[in-house]
Length: 316
Image 1: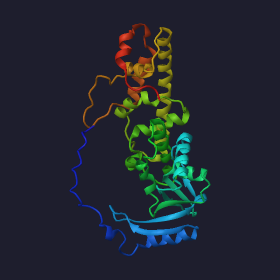
Image 2: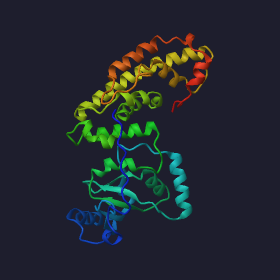
Image 3: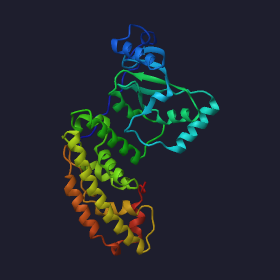
Image 4: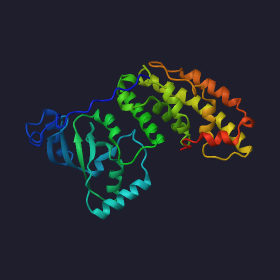
């Protein structure tokens, strides 16, 4: 892959609106329509203003909590995180971090960024929730990158991306490449399909390889999702062979949290191959080589010092 160009640092105070400009001017027709819709839905509009960076109109509103749901492609809730948030919000007796909401066609609201906060307020019996309501529904797909209230692990991120792809396939005639920004990384799509089939799949061991061989497909999403499922099937078959190699190592007395990454590294044909600019090794050919190597893996050739030098990331 070609090296990324470092973004030039912007000059101080060279972009966006002044504080006076944020609240000045007449809202656009879509913003006014959204204001009326929020009020018709039983919400209370607290402010209509322009985003200070891009100048886009948006609304700060109190929404009926029963009309707000997480996006269907979002990661699953972490019960422990919800419990902590519930306790903190309850102790403060204040809700200080508005969620982001996008109004749907039926009068309900999706939040692509705020599911845990929403669940916490529900746990406390809240009737309403404070939200930044956006007029552009497509923002919901881009805004997940801002979701930092609880850091993603690889499984959560991959499931989120594959669910987003399935949702987009039902409403947009576009290719995977058209959503490179929203999906962030092609490996997330393949790993997401793996996690759908096996929630305990140890994707972390294969992620470094996938980052070198996986790319966004120039296929319509409805077709590319089938390709992702096929790739996931091959990756899961490879993992079965890797598990067999791990079992052989354990029978020889090796016991380490790094066994799977160690085996994957040993069978990786790209281990000592430098990446060439603008090109990627073939996905299917690479996995076929890895599968053949895993099936021929000789645990008897592994010495304790080999595993000691491996280190690296453990399974998830």
